[in-house]
Structure formats: C-alpha cells, structure tokens
Image (cartoon, rainbow, N blue to C red; front, side, top):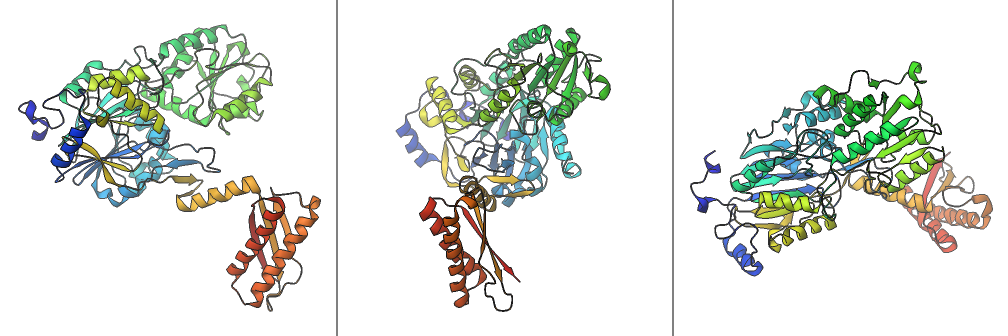
Length: 594
C-alpha cells in the first residue's frame, strides 16, 4: 500500500498545495488549468448510476483501471404515473458489460432504497461479493432468501474502522447516525485520492440506538485528505438541525403512559431504536405489545437476534384466539402501514379487513412517521377511514412522534467542515435538493466549480488534481418491475397503454369471419370498458360498427394481412370516436374465424 503514503504535503494529489480546500478558486483560471493540466493516461471515474434525479434506487460506481466498486443497490417505489408498477431499479447495463471488473458491492445501510435492487441485480453481475455492517447483512439475507439467492451470494460483515482491499481500492466503513441502526459512511481510498460517501446520516447526540457520530474520526478522515465527498442531500432545503430521537422517545413514553384505551402504533419497520423504546415504555406501563405486519415481524426478529432490539421479558406477544380479549388499556399493537400501503396492517384495519384487529371507539392510533413524497394521498385517505371509527389519531402534526433520519442544513455544513473535501458531489435527492446542498457548500467557502451537480449516468473524471464531468454518459434508464416482468422499453409501452385506458378506456370490436372465404358472417360486435355506457349512445355505436365493417371489407378485397386490416380498423374507428366525443381509447379489433 505504498501509494497511500506520502513523504510531504507536495505529494498529496488530492490536497491543494497553495490553498486550503474551501478557499475560493478562480473559475476561469481553474477551467484553463483543466484544459492544460488534466492528465488522461489513467483516470479515476465516479459514476452516479441512480438516485440523483429521484428519492430512491440509490447506486453509484467508482472505477479505476480494471477495477470497479459499487455503493448501494436500491429500489424506488413507483410514482403516481407508474400505473401497476411495483417498483423501479437502477439500469446496470454498463456494469453488466464490465462485471469482470467488479471487486465489491458496498452497502451503507439496510433500507430498501439501498438494498432493494440486489435480488434483481446480483445475478446480472455474476454475484460479486457484498460488504456491509452486521445488521445490514442480516436484512440482505432476509431479503434475498425469499428468492433462493442465498447459496450464490457472497456476504461479508464489515467492522467499522477496519480497512480491506478490493482491487485497486482500500475500503473503510465508518459509523453514521440514521433512522436504522448500523448505518455507515464509506471511505474508498484510491491511487489518486480518497472518495468519501456519506450514506444516509444525521448528527444525533442522543440516538435511540448506539452512540452519536464519531466527530474525531470524521475530522481525521478529513485531515488525511478527501478528494471528493459524495454527500446525501435529502434535507438540504431544510434549515437548522434534525430533531433527536430522544425527544420523540419522550413524547411516545407520555402517550403510552396516558392513553386510556388500546394503542395502535404504526411506524417504519426499520426504526429498530424506536421499536426498542416502544417495547420498553409499554413494559413500564404494564402493557403487552402485539406485532402485525410481515416486515415488522421480520425486522423485529432480526433486531432481537442481533441485539439491536432488547424486549423486556414477556412484553412481546403473538396474536392468537386466547389473547384477543386482552384488556385494551394494557395493549399496544405495533404495526406496518404508516405510509398507507394497500396491503399493510394499518390500512387493512382502516378498511375493516384485518383478520385479528377491529377498531374500537377508545383506540388511539399513532402514525410515528411522515409521509414519503408521493404517499400523501394514500395516508390522508387511510386517516379519513380511521377517523370514521371515532378513534383518536395522532400524527407528527399534533405531537413530535417522528423525526427524520437525514441531516438538515447545519449538519450538512458541519460535515463539510469536518471532511474539508476538495470537491463535493451532492447525491441522494432530486435536483432542487442537490442544488441547495451546493449552495450551502458555497456559503461556507467552497468555490462554485468545486461542487459538481451530476445526473444519473454522468461520468465524473479526475486525474487526482482536477475533476470534471465527461462528455460521455452511461445508460441510466428506469428499469420497471411489474410482478415477475422486468424491463424498460416494453413496460414503458405497457404503462402508456394503462395511462390511456385510465383516461379514455378501451373499445373492443369483434368480427366473426368465415374461415374458408374470409368474409364477415355478421356485423361486427362492439363492447367497451371505461369509455361510454353503450346503451345510452346508439349513434356512436352505429357509426363505429359501420367504420369497422368498411375497414375490414376494404382490407379483405385488397387481400391485406390481418395486421394491416386491424391497423385500418383502429384508425377508422378512432377517427369516428375523436370526431364525436373527443376521446382516444385503446381500440382492440378481434378477428374470430368460424
């Protein structure tokens, strides 16, 4: 590892010789230097593959020579326009072409927007080794076990501060505070300088689990030299500091102690520190805790096994017929559904469809979460249904029952001051979030051209002194997952059809044809779904049937193919519908030979 050592300051390729990292740089002078001095013989490449134009499906790659390491491999939950899509994963076509170069997949923590793509992507990449903390590995094991990938997956538990080799890179994980325990940032030491990825983080001096961030270690990493910092940007638009978990704990303890009836608490199943607090407070108030929801059960099991959740003896109970009548004032139900997910426990409770739980007038329901962007409507709809049962609903708007796991502006600035990177690459967030992160960096002294705002698929190059965006890009399409289907192009077409059907409906035209002569046996039949009520619109039906019949007969006379005849039918019927009702439904001609 000789190339990690330096004899004097002049040999540090990633630290400026004549200035401090945050000292402003003359943009014109720096651009001229890039044109004159940028060495292209062997470059380090940083490639944001996903997570820079959305919240989710986080994945990045670092490449030097014939070696690649990736950081995170997540999924994104569907946006409102993605009809029927289960989730979206990163486009890894570039990595698939270069899978022989991949030395390691590094995972910062166990949230699905960082591990949820592994079950799809690991087989494509030939199952490279995966490195993560103990809890994260436990959650990955649970995630991939359902798809029988365990025997082929090489999982390695990493200890914070212990360095290991991955090709040309030396890797070190360091502890971060986040909403899930055992979260990490990562230092990737390369022949041209150190790249630091923050992971998801906040600075919490009183976290629910573990210790607060190691500021001395962060300052030490900064003092050693950071060429580029890939910093998360989720809360970059929000001023101040993120509220501590300790304050949330105090509020939850008060609610559990004072609630007169049954308590139903919905939260993210990954919030193990908060779950541990709820179990402790419930025990103090002589309440039993019943768990509902598959992911909640799975994560509690993992947390207990690895020591992140330590339930007092006897507090955890399973639902069964014998304890259905457990006294309401001694009951806490801990469940999934804080985001209004369709099949989640709390949503089924709100619909009256839960097998074991029916709402009672004295129930208190706590949503210990904030709606994720895009889930607001589902959460409000669920709350409306809950309130119709005359229950008490507490959200973060009423009391401090939730806090974010992401750093706000003052914490982002503190991280920049501790690491003093030469370049900042804002990651993890939409453009306005990353732009706000850039502005914070400029406010504390970084030059405008020391912050690189990239998009998914951009290639950021450095020779160890200067850094720039390449003119080249890699593919960075959305890869849609719809049940067992996966793809970009064909599922985009499917979504377009679903969009058209949702707005304009579908018209089905059925032709009965003599199999010997090819002539129509009877007039075409017409049916529709989501278009119009046919019985009330005989004029439209008549004109559509006439147009369809003429299109078929003309095509048959000129001996056109079935595909060409169907295309003519679609055009003719579509033209009539557009002229009469200004709608554009999907038109499906069906030719039945008799």
